Length: 328
Ligand SMILES: [Zn+2]
Image (cartoon, rainbow, N blue to C red; front, side, top):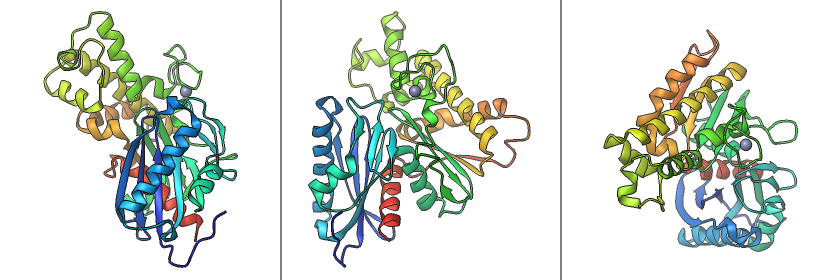
């Protein structure tokens, strides 16, 4: 592990996603002073992605007018199962070739600072819990809907990562055994039904079958460059086809919430991620209503279901919290 100097009092938090890499430079107080974004380009292979992460971190540190001497540690949230002690990504379903990748070791070699790797859902819930809820709730479930669906659990005031650090894979709860195929190889996982990727696939399949949507007016029949923001615009102009798809996804999220409330009875269920950020107004009431319909009578009483205000900063904030905690 790299040596750190006494003046190293900043942290870098990295959110590694299937689509983009986001890095943030944080003060000890968790104030974010700089961010940098780069596309992941996972199809180029593991080594190229690791180089891109290193480049993105370096840019963020440089833009903050700092050097790596000022950085006490780097935390990374990776989209898949992670071995925290070894700092490896065991498996990332939405990233080509990501199996047993020694991410910590590779980045420490490139950057010469201590690096800590956790699952991205765990990291995001840690960020929301620490920065948004001031670490108050004793139990909290986080569900983050984006390219996939990540999640995390706070139990007894601490991040619960399970027997072998793989807990919180909420996105791979099977909600429909006959459902669509998931990146993990199973069928009908939560994220294969309600993630942005799932909604986009359903929209593309519908358009192929001749469904009418205003999305094709702007993007053409192949729907190239479709984003969550486009869905919001379509919904606000009364697009019935898009409305059905978003509603179905929101219902699945509600069912996911009900399952988790039944099992954990948390104080707070927090919803975040790019999809929630773009479609909170459209999805939230459906999610809450469906969760109430499906949860066991009595289990929902007093449970708060809220949308995170951290937006896409949840991941980088949590990664910085992890780095701060590990370098204490
Ligand atoms: Zn799955």
